[in-house]
Length: 351
Image (cartoon, rainbow, N blue to C red; front, side, top):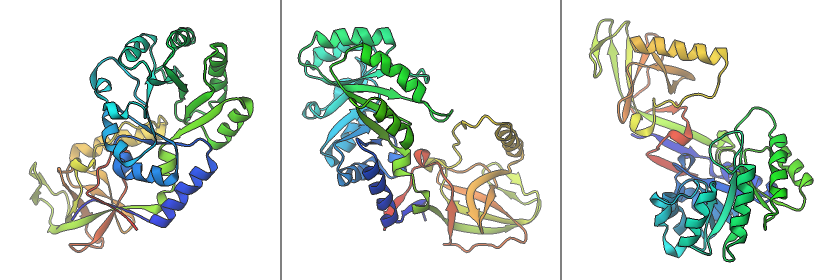
């Protein structure tokens, strides 16, 4: 009676080992909900892979990862002189690597920890965080003034898609080389295997450390299955009233109540990155269907995604099954298509 993630353990582990064996300098990313698996589970799996460093998303995530993984901990969210960045457990200080994206943050960070380990993040076409070329030169001077600081490298966080990013990386690398930084480590995100190979060939004097999350943990979707339980089934006629909002059934069929609702992330759709005309039309269509209560759900019966009868409840959802379709029994499993990074499962089982 829950929303479950079932993992083909042998297949999943084979994929993880393949990625680790074919990706020199791999730095697994552990953040958020742990890509659906949970941070605690991925922390242990990173130790099994034998990597020397993992990347966490935020400072609060250190508390869940650090006890289950013995290596270094790179925090992806840039350090700021306020908030949880100031609350790091002192016993973790030598394991934590801070990301610095502003020159003005270097002095207060080193005032708190003169031997801090830092990575300087460059601004990319994402325009999210990062140092410009002039900022990088100023940061280099600031680092050189502090003998105890450990510069662990520079970081380049690239956008997803939009073709190859190698030209952008090469442009940024000219700034890194010109700054004469006392490091030869480059942390990168969102480069393909072939792009990483070409980057290493162009900058053979640098150690390239790919930070990889989705394609590592979720790279073999065939090893993962999400299911929900059928909790109730009700035959309905046209005009019958149902649901929280007292809607009238537009035609006969069945209401199928399944586990999984908004508390799990079901029905909470993130904005899509697809800007095609087809995607926009689909969004408009969903909006029109929502006005009368017909929206495609992520739940599938007999290989077909079924419609929500009404918006999902907190821990369950009501689906409409048209007349003539096979009616499941209470206790049957229903396949669910989810966005793993936005879903909380009641149970995760790895065979």
